[in-house]
Length: 209
Ligand SMILES: [Zn+2]
Image (tube, rainbow, N blue to C red; front, side, top):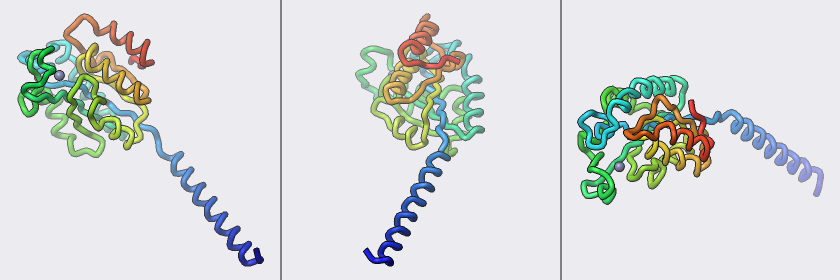
């Protein structure tokens, strides 16, 4: 290698290391985000006339969920509405009364949550994800959406604590997300609210707030 070749080899090396430093600095600047999941707050699950309603306990958490959603958006965090979406003849209805059939009143967001979503649905940090099963991660693009947004921690709200909330906590845990359960923003139609919060804490390391 003559002197000229040596010099150009050195300058290529220093260019490569300069690029590496810039890339690693940029990586360090990307801050891990939090996402608020609002699970199954539809008319069928919350409204007094819904077909599978958790009733008053579910109606009582609406304001708290909206406050959390506003807080998340004001801090540049993510909000995802996860919603049961069934076909009319879904096999799921061998277990449960018909509910959340796609496009029906029963599947619409309940009360003030509907207005909140209409107001914010164009926001880059707000997303609506229909789901075919209890676990909002099962056969949906929730995982890829959260990872694309650099989310590390998933906050659970909505209904029901012991069914879709619990199984979505598992879905999050199984995919490497940290989980937080907002106990005053979750409800169920059974007596199992506290039992399942404790169970989330024991088996998924969920933080209960
Ligand atoms: Zn369902």
